[in-house]
Amino acid sequence: MLKSMEKEIIIRARYLNQQKIRSIYFGGGTPSILDDIDIKKILTQIGKNYSIADNAEITLECNPDDLNEKKLISLKKLGINRLSIGIQSFDDTDLKFMNRSHNAAEAENCIHLAKMAGFKNITIDLIYGLPNQTLSKWEENLSKMFALNIQHFSPYALTVEKKTVLNHLLETKKVSLPNDEKIVEQFNFLQEKAEENDFIHYEISNFGKKGYFSNHNSSYWKNQDYLGIGPSAHSFNGKSRRWNVSSNKKYIEGITNKTTYFETEILSIEQQYNEYVLTSLRTIWGVNSSIIQNKFGAGIHAHFLKEIVKWISKKYILSEENIITLTQEGKAFADAIASDLFIV
Image (cartoon, rainbow, N blue to C red; front, side):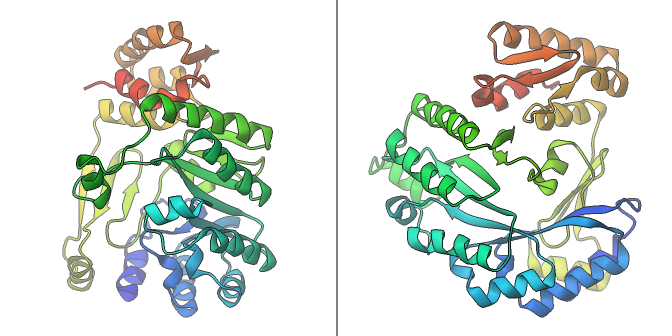
């Protein structure tokens, strides 16, 4: 697998048109189980074939139970300068419900260990909208996180996938989730507490302290080009999407035999507009109506201006000098608003 990924790094060296690499992200699955030598090989291959910025953000996704003092020191020496830790919760009841292999004490301890190893840029994931998660329990969770003095976090509302244990529990009424009103209440409370603790809500699911916004996440929201390597990895160059097959076997065979191991979709002007609105509206930088007019044409621009009127009247959208952003109340309805602005 790793040899195939190294080959793909070489094969696709021209995809980004010699743009400087500002972010390298080891994600998907559990990349922290990779041996040091494997991480080093991948980073070396990237360095040989791409121009990497001196201050590039190099992130590794990991789980608390993957980390120990020795592993963290090793990762730091390899050049990893940002950790994304799948904490999910600092409450043992929540963790047990989500079938996580770590407990609350391990969650806190791994952050302390990471700091001791020299990591100064740490982000974690948190889940809200869980069964029996009252506002006071959510506040306790947030308080524990803020006390750890990390630089970034990404909160997500619990989602239910079909054919999962959680879906079965819900269908058989063994558990129940908070209603939409309570989830919005938790989200609004989260925004309030994050601001009190000097976090900037720069994207719907991303909060960072000044100077610690994720380069990697921001590239998605700013519609910048990105290149994905490995099975299921996605790439985007502004006008098309490309994604690799999910099967490890088919991916390796495709790389080895020089046969197709990916699919490509050329985006229409309307799809490019939808993509721009979906990603930009979620951020503090917002949607620039001048960009819509210049890039997508007068017709699409007129459609956009017409559709935002009702959201402005509801005070879910703020329009100032051609920049359209979501208000604090509007952030809870970001997907619905974006969908309403789409051209289908």
